[in-house]
Length: 137
Image (tube, rainbow, N blue to C red; front, side):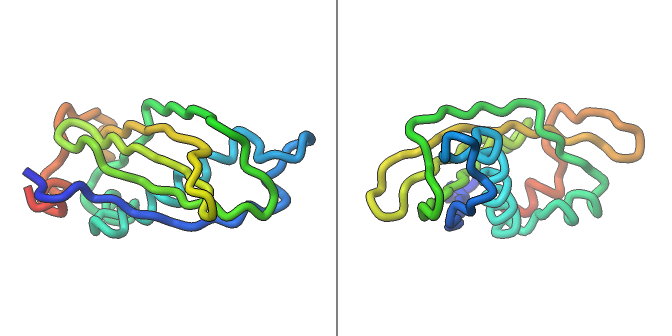
């Protein structure tokens, strides 16, 4: 069993090009913010997308949920936290986006990814040893 729950945080200053016509962050950008934090988490674990590929597996996202609590705005500093919640049969990562100044929650959500063997496209019913080794399991 993993002794600690792996997590990572990144800071994002909302750029102007992420805004919609109502001058708030367009809803689709939050998935990108999740991705930035997820890459940081995977890097921290030592199992980046390049490592995944080298181990013979792709990890497509099969499910994603985003709950919008309050809008983010131009130049707002956001803290995006990604936390690994499940790893035995899939990667389930939870996300929380908070305003860096107030600590107020802006958005939360999760993604689920499954291992797919690159050589034949077969979805795996359990996580491959390469991930488990990185997690110390």
